[in-house]
Length: 223
Image (tube, rainbow, N blue to C red; front, side, top):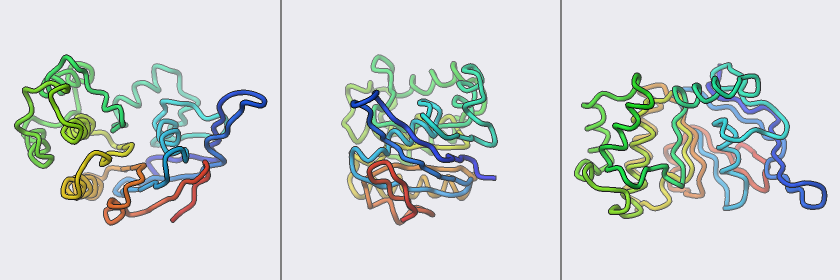
């Protein structure tokens, strides 16, 4: 059974003459142990697809299943619990708290989700892999764009989710860092049986993907 399934998902915004269809009858599956890449230009519907896949937005039509649970059939409390315990988001907005140091970002995760996070040793290894082990006492405002992006990746992976949804995780990274992040996501999928979905226009990540999809004008095809 796939970890994530989108069935005939359509998403529209606005009404009447102002109605815009962002996703059109999208069908998608992501399996544990695989990296799925969704490529497409800005405005193609990639981010909307990802937020619907993670239960942040609801589709206008269609269904989303996460580990056999139909998100539409869950109440808001159960949906929030599923996102907290099963899904890790790497979003372009980074989701870092500006007045907390990098280390305190992880402490905050422990307070919200006390169990199931990485061990201190595993976190240290992750920070070293991403080259940010020396940034733990700095605040987000003191970091470069690339550093902030890598901290956001570590923050999402620290929660040890079964499903990882990443929105342009390498947009601010040079080619060497792209390879580090690509290998990390690939190894997480293979060695720890994670289902990883990356939406991006960065074709440098294709070599690390098991499946590549293209999305254009809201329509998705297997590339």
